[in-house]
Length: 403
Image 1 (tube, rainbow, N blue to C red):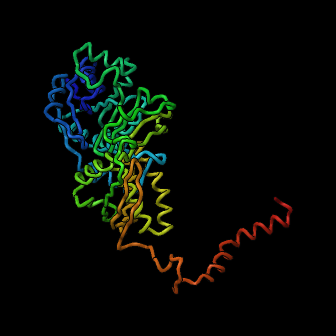
Image 2: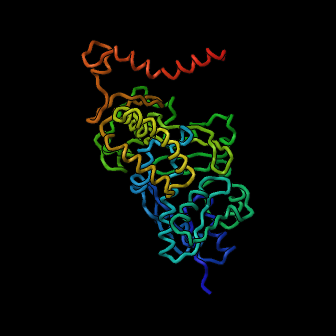
Image 3: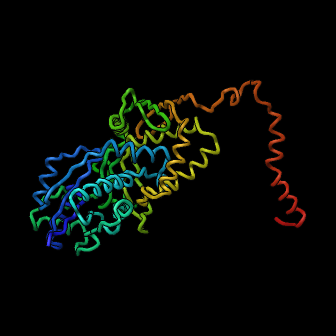
């Protein structure tokens, strides 16, 4: 009887470094590892060598950076989707593209199951598995954290040490981190106490602490076409634009979020997120929408943005509702084209001017100076009609002696 073949989402981190060994010890299987490079510059040779040394039959390293930006980041940016008003969804939309490639490799390698290193407490288990269910409902899913008797990251280190498996963490520096070209997240250790202030001087890796940022402001200019960034300070191309914005925002202390969020599984968790370039893109895109979208569309789109963010956070990227909302968003973006200038200074981002051929701003209508296009007397009738329901309600209350 042929051995079971399992495709493992592999990063070379603590969890997946020991899962190869654990699967082989407990399931008598062949393990195929697959790592997704989502913009962090994976050393493919080194990662493959490590996976094979840990017992994998093969290791695929797939560069999906540009597709990650164009197919996952840009739709979310156009929606202005932000989870709980602060989280720019860096890990959330990286999982579906990785899982999509996992399904492709699993088919190629004749695997019958997919495994991942997400814990039973986190959101990532849901994101990986819902993508697999949506794209390959016949594949089994293995989640060692929900099966094994290991209960902590320290015990994972014990397991690795006992088997001579090298891991990229120590007991003294054991944050749970996830990084891609969009962001870097930090969880665990002292951050588990929401009363403790993060030690940014030793925690941050992409962003200069704001107090150490330059004493002079720096400006950045971003041009959009139909809601998509196409140029930043003369630089073009999705990957090059984001890398440039990461660098500029990072050195100016821009893009730090420290928040307690509501996980999908029901508990609250505290994390610090570094999203330098993404913070600039969201700020610039919003400025352009303010200029180019009418009031009713903009306000309704804000309602859609919250639901869109929830769907992405919950791992429902391939759900029909997310896809339908994306179609609505694309319709709203047809006139969101133009350029936005931003001013960066010690962690802050301020608008410094925006232009668009589709601008709905009419200086003749908005001016506080003299004009001959707006009759102020028209406001009297408008207010009377707009306020008529309030007058009717007030008279009813007077008539019945109600407060």
